[in-house]
Length: 215
Image (cartoon, rainbow, N blue to C red; front, top):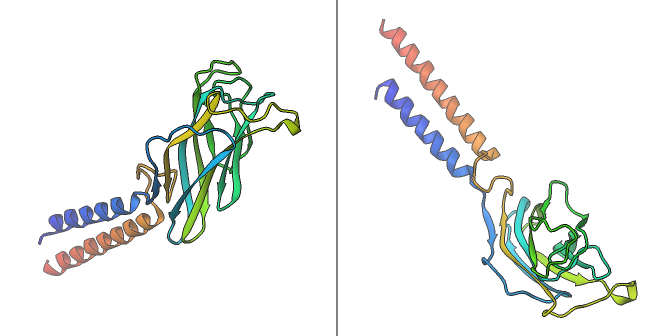
């Protein structure tokens, strides 16, 4: 095989290997929707993360009718990983009050796409949430929960599902939450490409020496 076909074949092989390594591993992909639940309830999502390490979570948080932000009726959302709370906030999802993030991992994004400010609309709303995770090896459990601030703390307290409720959908956990589309090569992919380019260099060097020897 002449030099040009060999170079083309090698380049194609490098591209295929790098592309294969560039896609994130999906640890969990949830259903498109869940039935609304009353506040003071939670649910778990468990999945096997293999050897563990850095990962990413994204999901949509839905509120129905009059879920409240910072106010006398406040309702708080909390996300926990392996029984440790990692993200918490309150959002106006139809019931009034203002939005607030109490704590979240560095790099998390919480986008209140409802955009209704502190108005009371009784039409619910939704929030897009994405956050990095540090997963343990083996099985991990995410807990999604909503609570109503209690009357003992000076708040109105629990309101039934007919007044307010919540749900999540599009829950997705991947090995690299910043690389869901596989646009940026992962470290293993960079290593494959470097090895491949080293091989290309060796082929060029060998072909040049063969050409000189033939003169």
